[in-house]
Length: 248
Ligand SMILES: Cc1cc2nc3c(=O)[nH]c(=O)nc-3n(C[C@H](O)[C@H](O)[C@H](O)COP(=O)(O)O)c2cc1C
View 1 (cartoon, rainbow, N blue to C red):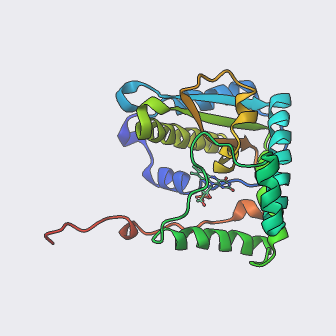
View 2 (spheres, helix red, strand yellow):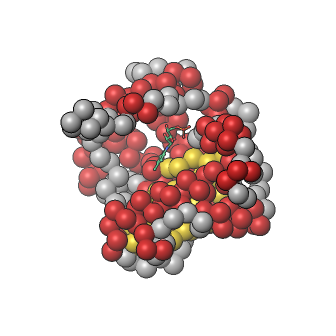
């Protein structure tokens, strides 16, 4: 399609209306739809056209096994968090449930970014009626990550460690194309850093060379009517990210 044929209003409305889905129907997704989404994702630009990423497509029993393994680990990890010093000590001794990611997932938010992360968390839990001090409620909501929020499909994105940040940025471009393609087909997605916390259950299901590291997951499915899917994370004005010239 030539640029002049594209309806700009429709494009702006389309791109702005993609929102993270956190409650899916179990409705299966035809394989040809999954393939078409991946084909669209592959039209993203890439560093020297290397496409330094691999994708595992988990559905059916593979999806269920990974979810069960995640939940078993999460149960131990969250019990440890709730159990104070003794709980954490137990986790350190048994080691089962300790984060075992390929990349460092648990990072401290830099001071300038912390308020944004805190706001999205407060707004989301506020919509769900989960109190700030309701640690159990917060853990229960987070645990839904490990059921992929009910989605029948989870993609797992691996990036080549040999290209460092460029493979990660390429994967980001691929992921955004994938998520917009899904959106165009009436499907919802949730990018999930939560799915990178334990790489071993994912690596056990797919043939992935050791130079490829698990970056994150993306849940894919048809969105339900649950109110969480109406959550509108704040969109910052561009003035928040455009820097001023030094000599202005
Ligand atoms: C790389 C990445 C990882 C993410 N991980 C999670 C996650 O583990 N769980 C979750 O509920 N949302 C996750 N998100 C979704 C973000 O919270 C969401 O994109 C952000 O709040 C903006 O909302 P929007 O996608 O609806 O515009 C992730 C997003 C990205 C890009």
